[in-house]
Length: 255
Length: 290
Image (cartoon, rainbow over all chains, first blue to last red; front, side, top):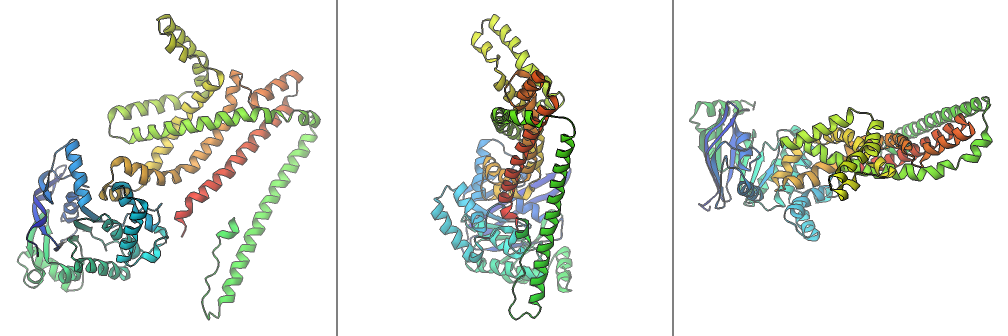
């Protein structure tokens, strides 16, 4: 494993008004590493993920991707350009899929390469088909999102993010909006990506997935990282009491 | 069209009950057709009743027949002015709605002021101000030495009518566009930003195309209303349907005859517009069929 981190988040803070939702969060994800962030609802894990590609503007701290340093709280054209660069290097998968309903499956995946990277349609088409094949949905390329199941929608959303060839994939509770029987197909695609060596940062409630696929598990509570270790240690011998509660609840069947 | 929208029963292999489903689908299709035939029959009945009623009124159908061509003479101006105005109004509404939704206080203020003033005053007064009032402004500018600029304030009847209708409908449509843009979920914007689109690309490629589908029915209604409101530009002497009907009605004292012809003309125009609107809406909803 390459020791050089793909992303280094340092001292991130986020306030919503008086509410301190992220407090001094620092994290590194190395090349080809899969990091899962677990924690109860409201622990700040989704906000943290959204701060990384600036869908949420962090209040303080810095984010370093690929030798590109963005300081929180900056303004102006230069800052916007940096944020744009960060978004080009990261792909994001949302809980609610957010596919573009007016575009076909193929067009959804082509949209980034064509509009953002200004690729030739034929080249973008090839990239889109390749990535749809990666998630096993090439045969649906001419359908519209409305006709897909939730699991299929999320797999298309993954293909859409992959088509931009990101250095790092961000997953924001990718299976939380899915019917239980559709969760497996999405997790399988993510597992496959991990095996292919994609660098991934995954916010999830799927403990089994975190345990099986993650290289590092990060536990968040009340806007802070309370524990970080390999899954073996987190699940067998959790140190923090909040981690213990979380793991116990998972063991007893509830999540 | 409607009969096609009933889904055909899916054919399962070796399904002993398949015949039942096919029969049910056929029955539903037949019932829908019968229902539509009944509705059409009511329409025809109403038209016949109305015609009979009018014939009892001692009007002269022959006079109407002689002068039906005012429709052809006047429709050009009515349609032309309406099309030009709806186009300009759409541009105004697009700019206005983006301004109203922007975080820029100046843009927001200007757009809000525009909508308030225009919605709060009658269209007829707006037409008078633009056609009869603006030349006064132009005159004063000319006196101050700005002759070229002053001339711009003296408008012919048709440009004045188009300007008034565009400004008026632009204000109403600003609100329609704003509601349409706001109805697109925040997640769409976030997903587009996340793949690296600029805010302008997000608007053009993701938000607008979806909003257009939502606001299209309302814009169609506005266009129909505008065709009828364009009758007001007859006060400036534009040779459109209402002006011509007025002329003959007064000259020959055939008020009922000529105004009925004019009413029929507008009705036909709006039926044609509705038909185009329906086709456009069908096409736009293709992606949303299940």
